[in-house]
Image 1 (cartoon, one colour):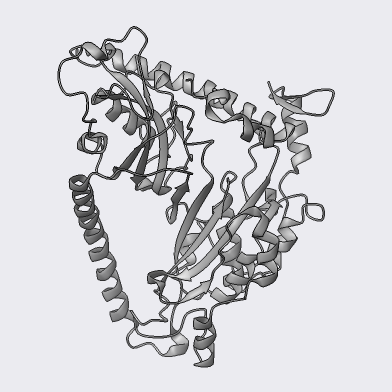
Image 2: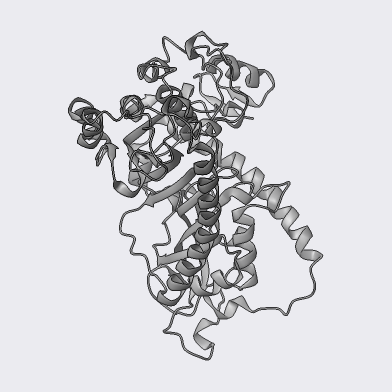
Length: 478
Protein backbone atom coordinates (compact mmCIF):
# COMPACT_ATOMS: atom_id res chain seq x y z
CA UNK A 1 0.00 0.00 0.00
CA UNK A 2 1.41 3.40 -0.95
CA UNK A 3 1.28 6.34 1.41
CA UNK A 4 -1.45 8.09 -0.53
CA UNK A 5 -3.67 5.13 -1.38
CA UNK A 6 -6.99 6.34 -0.02
CA UNK A 7 -8.74 3.12 -0.98
CA UNK A 8 -6.69 1.19 1.56
CA UNK A 9 -6.43 4.02 4.09
CA UNK A 10 -10.04 4.89 4.63
CA UNK A 11 -12.98 2.53 4.50
CA UNK A 12 -15.77 3.27 2.08
CA UNK A 13 -18.11 4.37 4.87
CA UNK A 14 -15.81 7.19 5.95
CA UNK A 15 -15.32 8.37 2.37
CA UNK A 16 -19.06 8.56 1.79
CA UNK A 17 -19.39 10.85 4.82
CA UNK A 18 -17.05 13.43 3.28
CA UNK A 19 -18.27 16.27 1.09
CA UNK A 20 -16.96 16.77 -2.42
CA UNK A 21 -14.89 19.77 -1.26
CA UNK A 22 -13.38 17.77 1.63
CA UNK A 23 -12.42 14.92 -0.71
CA UNK A 24 -10.81 17.32 -3.16
CA UNK A 25 -8.95 19.06 -0.33
CA UNK A 26 -7.62 15.73 0.92
CA UNK A 27 -6.44 14.64 -2.53
CA UNK A 28 -4.65 17.96 -3.07
CA UNK A 29 -2.79 17.67 0.22
CA UNK A 30 -1.74 14.11 -0.59
CA UNK A 31 -0.47 15.14 -4.03
CA UNK A 32 1.73 17.78 -2.43
CA UNK A 33 2.98 15.28 0.11
CA UNK A 34 3.86 12.73 -2.59
CA UNK A 35 6.03 15.30 -4.38
CA UNK A 36 7.87 16.13 -1.16
CA UNK A 37 8.39 12.45 -0.37
CA UNK A 38 9.83 11.73 -3.80
CA UNK A 39 12.43 14.44 -3.29
CA UNK A 40 13.24 13.17 0.22
CA UNK A 41 13.57 9.56 -0.98
CA UNK A 42 15.81 10.58 -3.88
CA UNK A 43 18.16 12.41 -1.54
CA UNK A 44 18.06 9.52 0.91
CA UNK A 45 19.17 7.11 -1.82
CA UNK A 46 22.08 9.39 -2.68
CA UNK A 47 23.19 9.42 0.95
CA UNK A 48 22.84 5.63 1.24
CA UNK A 49 25.09 5.13 -1.80
CA UNK A 50 27.89 6.91 0.05
CA UNK A 51 27.60 4.74 3.20
CA UNK A 52 30.06 1.90 3.91
CA UNK A 53 29.13 -1.52 2.54
CA UNK A 54 26.64 -3.49 4.67
CA UNK A 55 25.98 -7.18 4.44
CA UNK A 56 22.79 -7.85 2.49
CA UNK A 57 19.67 -8.99 4.28
CA UNK A 58 17.16 -11.35 2.69
CA UNK A 59 13.76 -9.80 3.46
CA UNK A 60 12.01 -12.47 1.38
CA UNK A 61 12.53 -14.90 4.26
CA UNK A 62 10.16 -12.85 6.44
CA UNK A 63 6.54 -11.77 6.18
CA UNK A 64 5.54 -8.21 7.04
CA UNK A 65 3.05 -7.04 9.65
CA UNK A 66 1.02 -3.84 9.61
CA UNK A 67 1.51 -2.25 13.03
CA UNK A 68 1.03 1.05 14.83
CA UNK A 69 3.86 2.58 16.84
CA UNK A 70 3.30 5.03 19.69
CA UNK A 71 6.18 7.52 19.85
CA UNK A 72 7.24 10.23 22.31
CA UNK A 73 9.84 12.87 21.57
CA UNK A 74 11.18 16.23 22.69
CA UNK A 75 11.14 18.41 19.61
CA UNK A 76 13.17 21.39 20.82
CA UNK A 77 16.34 20.26 18.98
CA UNK A 78 14.60 19.13 15.78
CA UNK A 79 13.32 20.88 12.67
CA UNK A 80 9.92 19.22 12.98
CA UNK A 81 8.53 15.71 12.72
CA UNK A 82 8.20 15.26 8.95
CA UNK A 83 11.20 14.50 6.74
CA UNK A 84 12.44 17.53 4.81
CA UNK A 85 14.45 17.99 1.65
CA UNK A 86 17.05 20.35 3.13
CA UNK A 87 17.80 18.78 6.54
CA UNK A 88 18.16 15.41 8.26
CA UNK A 89 17.46 16.88 11.69
CA UNK A 90 13.84 15.69 11.89
CA UNK A 91 12.09 13.08 14.01
CA UNK A 92 11.00 11.15 10.93
CA UNK A 93 14.53 11.03 9.51
CA UNK A 94 15.84 9.58 12.79
CA UNK A 95 12.97 7.09 12.93
CA UNK A 96 13.53 5.75 9.41
CA UNK A 97 17.27 5.57 9.96
CA UNK A 98 16.56 3.33 12.96
CA UNK A 99 14.00 1.24 11.05
CA UNK A 100 16.42 0.60 8.18
CA UNK A 101 19.37 -0.02 10.50
CA UNK A 102 17.44 -2.68 12.45
CA UNK A 103 16.22 -4.25 9.16
CA UNK A 104 12.59 -3.82 10.15
CA UNK A 105 11.89 -2.26 6.74
CA UNK A 106 13.58 -2.30 3.36
CA UNK A 107 12.72 1.31 2.56
CA UNK A 108 10.20 3.99 3.34
CA UNK A 109 8.47 3.75 -0.03
CA UNK A 110 7.66 0.05 0.49
CA UNK A 111 6.57 0.35 4.13
CA UNK A 112 2.95 1.61 3.69
CA UNK A 113 3.80 4.44 6.07
CA UNK A 114 1.34 6.94 7.55
CA UNK A 115 1.71 9.41 10.41
CA UNK A 116 -1.05 10.79 12.61
CA UNK A 117 0.20 14.36 12.99
CA UNK A 118 2.86 16.58 11.49
CA UNK A 119 4.35 18.61 14.33
CA UNK A 120 6.40 21.67 13.41
CA UNK A 121 9.88 22.75 14.43
CA UNK A 122 10.37 22.70 18.20
CA UNK A 123 7.04 20.99 18.97
CA UNK A 124 7.09 17.81 21.09
CA UNK A 125 4.81 14.78 21.36
CA UNK A 126 3.88 12.21 23.98
CA UNK A 127 1.61 10.10 21.79
CA UNK A 128 2.52 10.53 18.14
CA UNK A 129 1.33 7.48 16.20
CA UNK A 130 2.63 6.07 12.92
CA UNK A 131 1.46 2.99 11.01
CA UNK A 132 3.64 0.92 8.69
CA UNK A 133 4.62 -2.60 7.61
CA UNK A 134 7.44 -4.10 9.68
CA UNK A 135 9.33 -7.36 9.33
CA UNK A 136 7.71 -10.08 11.44
CA UNK A 137 8.67 -13.49 12.76
CA UNK A 138 5.09 -14.73 12.47
CA UNK A 139 3.44 -16.65 9.65
CA UNK A 140 -0.11 -15.55 10.54
CA UNK A 141 -1.97 -13.24 12.86
CA UNK A 142 -3.53 -9.77 12.88
CA UNK A 143 -1.86 -7.49 10.37
CA UNK A 144 0.44 -10.20 8.98
CA UNK A 145 0.88 -10.07 5.21
CA UNK A 146 2.74 -12.69 3.19
CA UNK A 147 5.35 -11.44 0.77
CA UNK A 148 4.91 -12.30 -2.86
CA UNK A 149 7.29 -15.18 -3.64
CA UNK A 150 8.38 -15.11 0.00
CA UNK A 151 10.01 -18.07 1.78
CA UNK A 152 8.96 -17.33 5.40
CA UNK A 153 7.57 -20.87 5.76
CA UNK A 154 10.97 -22.34 4.97
CA UNK A 155 12.94 -20.11 7.36
CA UNK A 156 14.45 -22.03 10.30
CA UNK A 157 13.89 -20.87 13.88
CA UNK A 158 10.93 -19.82 16.02
CA UNK A 159 7.95 -18.47 14.08
CA UNK A 160 5.62 -17.94 17.06
CA UNK A 161 7.40 -15.20 19.07
CA UNK A 162 7.19 -11.67 17.68
CA UNK A 163 10.14 -9.32 17.27
CA UNK A 164 10.59 -6.92 20.20
CA UNK A 165 9.95 -3.82 18.12
CA UNK A 166 10.04 -1.32 20.98
CA UNK A 167 13.21 -2.76 22.47
CA UNK A 168 15.34 -2.89 19.33
CA UNK A 169 14.24 0.52 18.03
CA UNK A 170 14.98 2.31 21.30
CA UNK A 171 18.47 0.79 21.27
CA UNK A 172 19.36 2.80 18.17
CA UNK A 173 17.13 5.88 18.42
CA UNK A 174 18.36 9.15 20.01
CA UNK A 175 17.53 9.42 23.71
CA UNK A 176 15.01 12.21 23.13
CA UNK A 177 12.98 9.98 20.76
CA UNK A 178 11.33 6.94 22.36
CA UNK A 179 9.00 4.28 21.01
CA UNK A 180 6.57 3.69 23.88
CA UNK A 181 4.40 0.85 22.55
CA UNK A 182 3.20 -1.01 19.48
CA UNK A 183 0.00 -2.67 18.31
CA UNK A 184 -0.87 -5.00 15.40
CA UNK A 185 -3.57 -3.43 13.22
CA UNK A 186 -5.63 -4.38 10.20
CA UNK A 187 -3.99 -3.80 6.79
CA UNK A 188 -6.39 -0.93 5.99
CA UNK A 189 -5.54 0.95 9.21
CA UNK A 190 -4.00 4.39 8.70
CA UNK A 191 -2.49 6.43 11.54
CA UNK A 192 -3.61 9.55 9.71
CA UNK A 193 -7.10 8.72 8.48
CA UNK A 194 -8.16 6.30 11.24
CA UNK A 195 -7.51 8.81 14.01
CA UNK A 196 -10.72 9.93 15.74
CA UNK A 197 -9.44 12.72 17.97
CA UNK A 198 -6.20 14.60 18.56
CA UNK A 199 -5.25 16.34 21.80
CA UNK A 200 -2.74 19.16 22.11
CA UNK A 201 -1.42 20.70 25.34
CA UNK A 202 0.30 24.04 25.80
CA UNK A 203 2.20 24.72 29.04
CA UNK A 204 2.80 28.24 30.36
CA UNK A 205 3.65 30.04 33.63
CA UNK A 206 0.88 31.85 35.46
CA UNK A 207 2.76 35.14 35.66
CA UNK A 208 0.33 38.08 35.80
CA UNK A 209 -2.27 36.36 33.65
CA UNK A 210 -5.94 36.44 34.60
CA UNK A 211 -6.90 32.78 34.17
CA UNK A 212 -10.61 33.53 34.59
CA UNK A 213 -10.60 35.80 31.54
CA UNK A 214 -8.60 33.26 29.56
CA UNK A 215 -11.12 30.55 30.49
CA UNK A 216 -13.97 32.78 29.28
CA UNK A 217 -12.23 33.24 25.95
CA UNK A 218 -11.21 29.59 25.64
CA UNK A 219 -14.72 28.18 25.93
CA UNK A 220 -15.81 30.33 22.97
CA UNK A 221 -13.50 28.25 20.77
CA UNK A 222 -15.63 25.12 21.16
CA UNK A 223 -17.70 24.08 18.17
CA UNK A 224 -17.55 23.88 14.40
CA UNK A 225 -16.07 27.18 13.20
CA UNK A 226 -14.00 28.83 10.50
CA UNK A 227 -10.61 29.37 12.18
CA UNK A 228 -8.91 31.30 9.37
CA UNK A 229 -8.18 34.17 11.79
CA UNK A 230 -6.68 31.76 14.33
CA UNK A 231 -4.18 29.89 12.15
CA UNK A 232 -1.64 30.43 9.42
CA UNK A 233 -3.34 30.04 6.06
CA UNK A 234 -1.57 27.58 3.75
CA UNK A 235 -3.30 28.48 0.50
CA UNK A 236 -0.15 27.84 -1.54
CA UNK A 237 -0.47 24.13 -0.70
CA UNK A 238 -4.13 24.01 -1.65
CA UNK A 239 -5.74 24.49 1.79
CA UNK A 240 -8.80 26.68 1.29
CA UNK A 241 -11.22 25.14 3.81
CA UNK A 242 -10.65 26.45 7.33
CA UNK A 243 -13.64 24.95 9.09
CA UNK A 244 -12.66 22.62 11.91
CA UNK A 245 -14.38 21.27 15.04
CA UNK A 246 -12.93 21.91 18.49
CA UNK A 247 -14.50 19.32 20.79
CA UNK A 248 -13.24 20.54 24.15
CA UNK A 249 -11.00 23.07 25.87
CA UNK A 250 -9.51 22.65 29.34
CA UNK A 251 -7.54 25.36 31.16
CA UNK A 252 -6.04 24.47 34.51
CA UNK A 253 -3.09 24.86 36.81
CA UNK A 254 -0.64 21.98 36.56
CA UNK A 255 -0.53 19.20 39.15
CA UNK A 256 -4.35 19.28 39.21
CA UNK A 257 -4.43 21.65 42.18
CA UNK A 258 -6.80 24.24 40.75
CA UNK A 259 -8.99 23.33 37.81
CA UNK A 260 -9.86 26.53 35.98
CA UNK A 261 -12.24 25.40 33.27
CA UNK A 262 -13.14 21.99 32.00
CA UNK A 263 -15.21 20.55 29.18
CA UNK A 264 -16.03 16.92 28.66
CA UNK A 265 -17.48 16.51 25.17
CA UNK A 266 -17.65 13.09 23.59
CA UNK A 267 -18.79 13.97 20.08
CA UNK A 268 -19.47 16.99 17.83
CA UNK A 269 -23.20 16.54 18.51
CA UNK A 270 -22.64 17.58 22.11
CA UNK A 271 -20.92 20.85 21.21
CA UNK A 272 -24.05 23.02 21.19
CA UNK A 273 -25.41 21.56 24.44
CA UNK A 274 -22.04 22.11 26.12
CA UNK A 275 -21.96 25.80 25.23
CA UNK A 276 -25.23 26.39 27.09
CA UNK A 277 -24.29 24.32 30.14
CA UNK A 278 -20.61 25.04 30.74
CA UNK A 279 -19.90 27.09 33.84
CA UNK A 280 -17.44 29.96 33.78
CA UNK A 281 -14.68 28.69 36.04
CA UNK A 282 -14.23 26.14 38.79
CA UNK A 283 -15.01 26.60 42.45
CA UNK A 284 -11.31 26.69 43.28
CA UNK A 285 -10.82 29.98 41.43
CA UNK A 286 -13.96 31.44 42.99
CA UNK A 287 -12.58 30.42 46.37
CA UNK A 288 -9.35 32.24 45.56
CA UNK A 289 -11.31 35.40 44.81
CA UNK A 290 -13.29 35.14 48.04
CA UNK A 291 -10.02 34.90 49.91
CA UNK A 292 -8.69 38.02 48.18
CA UNK A 293 -6.36 36.25 45.77
CA UNK A 294 -6.24 37.63 42.23
CA UNK A 295 -6.41 35.03 39.44
CA UNK A 296 -3.63 36.81 37.61
CA UNK A 297 -1.04 35.59 40.08
CA UNK A 298 -0.79 36.44 43.76
CA UNK A 299 2.22 38.31 45.17
CA UNK A 300 3.49 35.46 47.27
CA UNK A 301 6.65 33.58 48.12
CA UNK A 302 7.99 31.31 45.39
CA UNK A 303 6.38 27.91 45.42
CA UNK A 304 3.08 28.92 47.00
CA UNK A 305 -0.15 27.50 45.61
CA UNK A 306 -0.96 30.86 43.96
CA UNK A 307 2.50 31.90 42.90
CA UNK A 308 3.12 33.67 39.62
CA UNK A 309 5.63 30.86 39.00
CA UNK A 310 2.92 28.18 38.96
CA UNK A 311 2.70 26.31 35.66
CA UNK A 312 -0.61 26.06 33.82
CA UNK A 313 -1.75 24.05 30.84
CA UNK A 314 -4.24 24.56 28.04
CA UNK A 315 -5.67 21.37 26.54
CA UNK A 316 -7.49 21.48 23.19
CA UNK A 317 -9.19 18.42 21.66
CA UNK A 318 -10.39 18.21 18.08
CA UNK A 319 -10.73 15.92 15.08
CA UNK A 320 -8.07 17.79 13.11
CA UNK A 321 -6.23 21.09 13.29
CA UNK A 322 -4.98 23.78 10.93
CA UNK A 323 -1.39 24.94 10.50
CA UNK A 324 -0.26 26.78 13.67
CA UNK A 325 -3.84 26.82 14.97
CA UNK A 326 -2.94 26.10 18.61
CA UNK A 327 -0.12 28.64 18.71
CA UNK A 328 -2.38 31.36 17.28
CA UNK A 329 -5.11 30.49 19.78
CA UNK A 330 -2.63 30.70 22.67
CA UNK A 331 -1.33 34.07 21.45
CA UNK A 332 -4.83 35.56 21.56
CA UNK A 333 -5.66 33.95 24.92
CA UNK A 334 -2.49 35.46 26.38
CA UNK A 335 -3.63 38.91 25.25
CA UNK A 336 -6.94 38.23 27.00
CA UNK A 337 -5.14 37.08 30.15
CA UNK A 338 -3.03 40.24 30.18
CA UNK A 339 -6.20 42.33 30.03
CA UNK A 340 -5.32 43.78 26.62
CA UNK A 341 -8.25 42.13 24.87
CA UNK A 342 -11.75 41.15 25.95
CA UNK A 343 -12.77 37.46 25.86
CA UNK A 344 -15.26 38.58 23.20
CA UNK A 345 -12.36 39.01 20.76
CA UNK A 346 -12.66 35.25 20.13
CA UNK A 347 -16.23 35.75 18.88
CA UNK A 348 -15.03 38.55 16.63
CA UNK A 349 -12.22 36.49 15.11
CA UNK A 350 -14.54 33.54 14.50
CA UNK A 351 -17.02 35.79 12.70
CA UNK A 352 -15.34 35.65 9.29
CA UNK A 353 -18.21 37.42 7.56
CA UNK A 354 -17.64 40.47 9.74
CA UNK A 355 -13.85 40.03 9.95
CA UNK A 356 -12.73 38.18 6.79
CA UNK A 357 -9.09 39.25 7.18
CA UNK A 358 -6.81 38.12 9.98
CA UNK A 359 -5.30 40.97 12.03
CA UNK A 360 -1.52 40.81 12.24
CA UNK A 361 -0.19 39.33 15.48
CA UNK A 362 2.71 37.13 16.56
CA UNK A 363 2.16 33.45 17.30
CA UNK A 364 3.02 32.01 20.70
CA UNK A 365 6.28 30.07 21.05
CA UNK A 366 6.42 26.49 19.78
CA UNK A 367 8.45 25.07 22.68
CA UNK A 368 5.57 24.62 25.20
CA UNK A 369 3.37 22.84 22.64
CA UNK A 370 2.96 19.05 22.71
CA UNK A 371 0.88 16.58 20.72
CA UNK A 372 -0.40 14.82 23.81
CA UNK A 373 -2.73 12.14 22.51
CA UNK A 374 -4.07 10.54 19.34
CA UNK A 375 -7.19 8.42 19.80
CA UNK A 376 -8.22 5.40 17.72
CA UNK A 377 -10.90 2.74 17.91
CA UNK A 378 -9.89 -0.76 19.04
CA UNK A 379 -6.21 -0.03 19.71
CA UNK A 380 -4.68 -2.12 22.49
CA UNK A 381 -1.11 -0.98 23.01
CA UNK A 382 1.59 -3.56 23.78
CA UNK A 383 4.23 -2.29 26.20
CA UNK A 384 7.63 -3.88 26.76
CA UNK A 385 7.97 -3.97 30.57
CA UNK A 386 11.78 -3.84 30.64
CA UNK A 387 11.95 -1.09 28.05
CA UNK A 388 9.24 0.90 29.78
CA UNK A 389 11.31 0.93 32.97
CA UNK A 390 14.41 1.98 31.03
CA UNK A 391 12.49 4.78 29.28
CA UNK A 392 11.17 6.07 32.61
CA UNK A 393 14.72 6.10 34.02
CA UNK A 394 16.02 8.01 30.98
CA UNK A 395 13.22 10.57 31.15
CA UNK A 396 13.75 10.99 34.88
CA UNK A 397 17.40 11.77 34.26
CA UNK A 398 16.43 14.36 31.65
CA UNK A 399 13.83 15.77 34.06
CA UNK A 400 16.46 15.96 36.82
CA UNK A 401 18.83 18.01 34.69
CA UNK A 402 16.15 20.49 33.64
CA UNK A 403 14.62 20.74 37.13
CA UNK A 404 17.99 21.41 38.77
CA UNK A 405 18.49 24.32 36.37
CA UNK A 406 14.97 25.55 37.05
CA UNK A 407 15.47 25.34 40.82
CA UNK A 408 18.75 27.26 40.60
CA UNK A 409 17.00 30.02 38.67
CA UNK A 410 14.19 30.09 41.23
CA UNK A 411 16.73 30.46 44.03
CA UNK A 412 18.41 33.35 42.20
CA UNK A 413 15.06 35.05 41.64
CA UNK A 414 14.04 34.61 45.26
CA UNK A 415 17.27 36.19 46.42
CA UNK A 416 16.81 39.13 44.07
CA UNK A 417 13.17 39.75 44.99
CA UNK A 418 13.09 39.01 48.73
CA UNK A 419 13.43 42.69 49.68
CA UNK A 420 10.87 44.01 47.19
CA UNK A 421 7.53 45.32 48.41
CA UNK A 422 4.28 44.02 46.95
CA UNK A 423 3.89 46.98 44.57
CA UNK A 424 7.45 46.50 43.32
CA UNK A 425 7.11 42.86 42.26
CA UNK A 426 7.95 42.02 38.64
CA UNK A 427 5.60 39.45 37.11
CA UNK A 428 6.95 38.86 33.61
CA UNK A 429 7.16 35.06 33.70
CA UNK A 430 4.77 34.66 30.76
CA UNK A 431 6.07 37.53 28.63
CA UNK A 432 8.59 35.41 26.74
CA UNK A 433 5.88 33.11 25.35
CA UNK A 434 5.35 35.51 22.45
CA UNK A 435 8.63 36.26 20.62
CA UNK A 436 9.65 39.76 19.63
CA UNK A 437 9.75 43.16 21.26
CA UNK A 438 6.78 44.30 23.32
CA UNK A 439 5.36 47.70 22.35
CA UNK A 440 4.87 50.23 25.13
CA UNK A 441 1.48 51.25 23.75
CA UNK A 442 -0.85 48.39 22.86
CA UNK A 443 -2.88 48.48 19.66
CA UNK A 444 -6.10 46.36 19.78
CA UNK A 445 -6.23 43.43 17.37
CA UNK A 446 -9.19 44.70 15.34
CA UNK A 447 -7.44 48.06 14.80
CA UNK A 448 -4.29 46.50 13.39
CA UNK A 449 -3.23 46.08 9.80
CA UNK A 450 -4.89 43.04 8.24
CA UNK A 451 -3.42 40.10 6.35
CA UNK A 452 -4.55 39.24 2.84
CA UNK A 453 -8.04 37.77 2.63
CA UNK A 454 -8.58 34.15 1.61
CA UNK A 455 -10.11 35.25 -1.69
CA UNK A 456 -7.12 37.47 -2.44
CA UNK A 457 -4.67 34.64 -1.73
CA UNK A 458 -6.60 32.19 -3.89
CA UNK A 459 -6.61 34.74 -6.73
CA UNK A 460 -2.86 35.32 -6.29
CA UNK A 461 -1.92 31.64 -6.48
CA UNK A 462 -4.39 30.99 -9.28
CA UNK A 463 -2.70 33.73 -11.28
CA UNK A 464 0.69 32.13 -10.59
CA UNK A 465 -0.83 28.80 -11.74
CA UNK A 466 -0.14 27.10 -8.43
CA UNK A 467 -3.91 26.70 -8.13
CA UNK A 468 -6.48 26.05 -10.83
CA UNK A 469 -10.21 26.68 -10.67
CA UNK A 470 -12.55 24.60 -12.77
CA UNK A 471 -15.95 25.54 -14.17
CA UNK A 472 -17.69 24.56 -10.94
CA UNK A 473 -15.46 26.88 -8.88
CA UNK A 474 -13.55 24.01 -7.29
CA UNK A 475 -9.89 24.81 -6.64
CA UNK A 476 -7.18 22.41 -7.73
CA UNK A 477 -3.44 22.64 -7.25
CA UNK A 478 -1.45 22.75 -10.49
